Figure 1 (cartoon, rainbow, N blue to C red):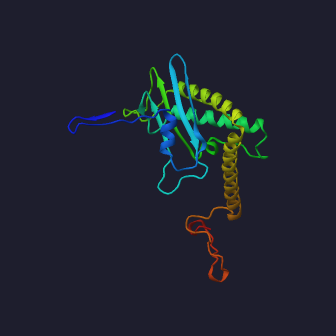
Figure 2 (cartoon, rainbow, N blue to C red):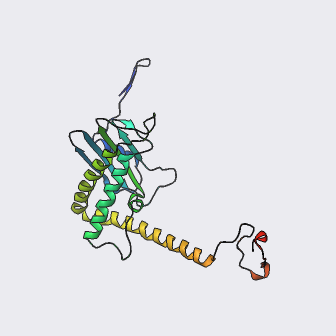
Figure 3 (spheres, rainbow, N blue to C red):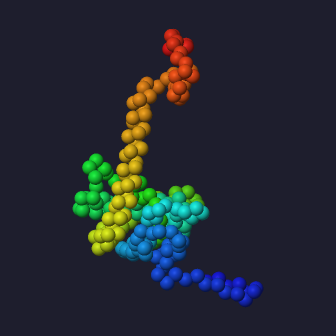
Length: 228
């Protein structure tokens, strides 16, 4: 709520469903999976976590930006930290478990956190009794115990959600599997390129990049000083 006493104006911002409405509004116009976002709240004696998250299957349209916001005791942590690491770990473990239980993974494919994390938009808010930050600006959380807490509650909550929403869960799993398959293809191309290129050339020579043999030259040199 904002009150301008000079101009006697008042403006209010209110999200009836909290983080869910906030994230949905920020991503308005983009395809979301799931829609509405997956949300939850968990607390213990000394810590609590609230979250809303969704994936963007089609990526970002022109001018759009992903939402990757995290807070500790309402302090924005723009560089993330252990709570965000816990979120990523929990999601990865839940998706892996879901894929293995339903035999969704192709042979030779193993999901990495990056495969699951790609195109994920989220808002994460945690509350801690004694948070530890990196640096004086409090932009990054460094409390190690928070990672364990967040990863545990996210994994349990999201595993339950995936098995209660199987169709949406399989679509999320296929997004991660597609990312993993693309990553593996890229890695294989790099390996093949390294093998085909042979041993590295000395610094004084450069590998041939042209394909037309009539326009290329071969240098034969000997001696260490000449790069032979």
